[in-house]
Image: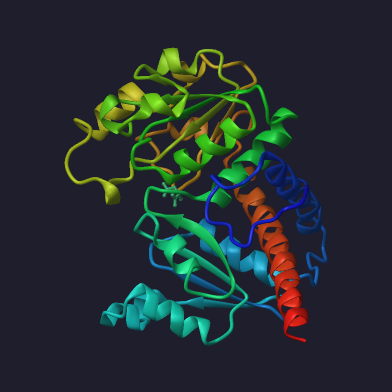
Length: 319
Ligand code: ASP
């Protein structure tokens, strides 16, 4: 079994063995990134375009670094300065970029499904860097690598995902990945921040943090995604922190060796106490960032291999 995908649009289409293959390859890139050389030429000659229609710090920077370390020509399209601001549609922008013959297109967009749509219009590999509240596959993969390294396995763990589940693509991708790898996922948060139809997700749902964190191996905190909220979902941030913010008292319900995760950006004093975020014995937030570069290198490496294979097949057919 090998990685068969042409794009990385979400966790949904991935087979558990593809996930394992990608994480195993990412392990080798963790080592490379810790060495002085840091470079491998696996994307040499390929062009990577990063197109971010939504703000990003970690994801954009790590995709850029990942491409450069693997030898690609990397271009960051400044959406704020581009024709998109002048009313060009997503598809027109994609077709324009397509004419520049990119090999890898990394896209973040505020609308769920926009990246899938775009992947149908271009002839290169597309990587979803987050689309609306739909999916953020490289985030779930980097979280999985962090968990696997810290816990020594990626199965039969109790993982509590806490906070604003309804608006979070991170929660959705993690739920899919952790489910495929046979973990027990709990969703913890106020009913107003739970997605509709949550009962069908096949996970336990809690509106009480103490109960939701009881015996958890992994505690994953999420930001309140105000940019996707149309109305008041919580009484106040103070009240939210009191009931759902992770502090040492609430964390004491989890296993003594439980790790604390956060995809960032983090709002200290809202969903997480700064002391917990900075506690190097519990928090793995910095490791998540490190794993992000390695996972994105692995994803682009695997997709580039498939792209080359498909192009070779097409060339042979034409010959
Ligand atoms: N950075 C993550 C995302 O893009 C999480 C967040 O924004 O809160 O979804």
